[in-house]
Length: 119
Image 1: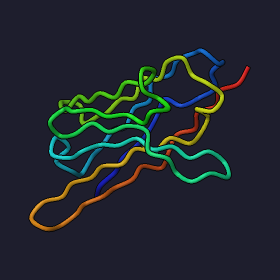
Image 2: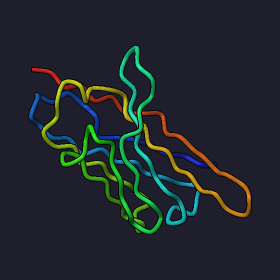
Image 3: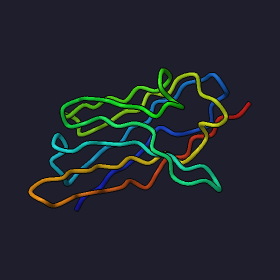
Image 4: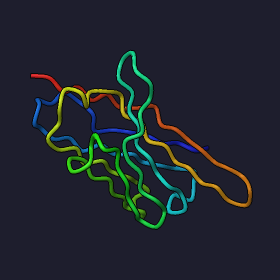
């Protein structure tokens, strides 16, 4: 059974930092690209960042320079370090594992972790 479990969310003041974790089980973790998405109330889910199986990264313009995605394949975990947080970063953050191989696509989601940015 595949599970992605996010953690690390919470309440932080503007300008503060949080580190989110996404722990995976039931998949060959190192083969998967891992994305972070977020969804604020009343808004569509928004892509935030990706780290590929090879370790390449990319970010949404809105978080570039403030967020850093990384992975530890020995722990089957991806991290999202979020610095200089803004109120507009407040959302439920989800991780997504994706793999395309031999014409098939595999895609799994976690349950999300809440990030609140407020003074």
